Structure formats: structure tokens, C-alpha cells
Length: 251
Image (cartoon, rainbow, N blue to C red; front, side, top):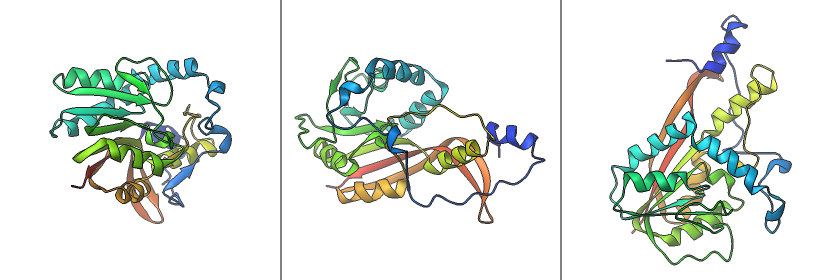
């Protein structure tokens, strides 16, 4: 098993100590209020241009390519005709899906207007959300942690999904995030730049509870990416940085 590079850097100066961590106290790790998404009705205070530059840099990173490879490895096993990417940002995922599946209708929605091709502005957390088109595949890549109202968003998205259709979610692993933050807090790692529009890091169990109530069942849970090897309450564990979740709509 390969050690995470950050952990190796720490261990060089620590004589290969074993890491000991307490597990997260909740499936949800909420960020400080000052770092949450902009409140409803105050979008003009949010610098969309600056955030677009940040998204463009991330979309061309090794990590995002890893996310897309993991997601499309599942997508290619599915049958579908229409895809909606939720939280599409600048539309990178939309463009990638169109290249890989040219016969399908591929669109995206985002709360902010990044002027992406095939993308529209719509807030899935809004009580006024309305969308006439239907899809048999919804994707969310690093998007679910940005939702200010998870339950309402899933309820709204469920209406767009055809019976038997799938919701695919690629997401940071909250346990991995907690370990990285713990190492940062003790000064063992340099601070890594995060995304200040994250509302909460959601674990699979927390997402399950909301999604199941809306009539979707989880059919896949896959961990991928770099790994941290650690000991939690005397148990050796390997925690990978990303999780891929797939849900199928009943009916």
C-alpha cells in the first residue's frame, strides 16, 4: 500500500510514528459560517469572475481528471439518452460528456452564470425551481457539498430524473478531509487551499438518508484517489480522498 505523500513528508521527521485519529463525530463536517456559500439574495457580493478563474484551474488539474475518469468508468456501463450536470460551473464536464457521448443530449445548470456552452442558470435549492426537461442521468462532480438546502435540492432533482434513471455523485471523502485538517492544525502539513463556497462535507450515510427518502437507492459506493494509511482506535485503516456514489430511481 502506498503512503500518501503528505504523510511521508511528516514521517521523515517523526521516525515512522503511527498516526492515531478519532473518527469524525458526524457524517457531516460543517465549515465555519464565514466560509459558507453566499446567502440567498446576496449573490452580487460574490465575485463570480474570481471563482471562474479558480474553477478553470481546478478543471485542468490532475485531481479533476481523476474525478472524470472515475465517473466515466461507471457512466460507460449505463444506458441513457440525456445527461444533466448539476453544479456544472464553467461547463467543463458538459463539454467532456458531449465528446464522449455525442449521440446524447448533454446540458448543465449552475446557480451562478459562468456563460458555459450548453449551461443555464438555475438554483436547485430554490422553492421556485422549475425545469421542463427530463433526464435519465444526473451527475454532480464536487457539487453536493455546495448545496445550502440538500433535501430541497434532491427533491427538485428527483422530478427531473426518469424512473430507472441514475444520479452519480463524485465527492471528497469527509474522513480524508478531516485527517488533512488535523495534520494542518498540528503543523505537519502546509495549508492546502480549499473552496470557501463549501457548505458541508457530506459522507455517504448522510447523503443516503436524504436521497433514499426521495425514492432513489444506492447501487454503488467506490473510493478512489490517493490514500492515507492510519490507525483509528486501534484499527488499521486506509482512507482514500474521493468517493463515487451512484443512485437509481425506483420505478
